[in-house]
Length: 71
Image (cartoon, rainbow, N blue to C red):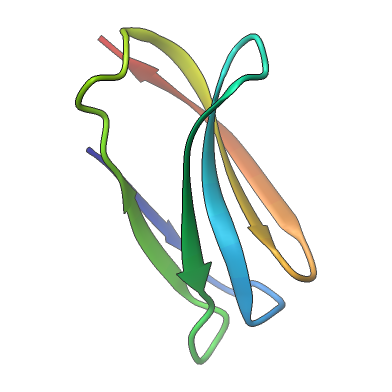
């Protein structure tokens, strides 16, 4: 399980996406931006192969990305 916490985001709604390193969408989950621009979410990793992934949090106003490794 990947736990995502972000703050000071602009926008009200968005999505949390997990991509493999070839750019294929693996998981997508809708999120809400709460008071203060805070987002929290989880991406289940059961059934996802070991490797390097890109986690992308996109709101209706901006985008934030980070890499993660499952092993």
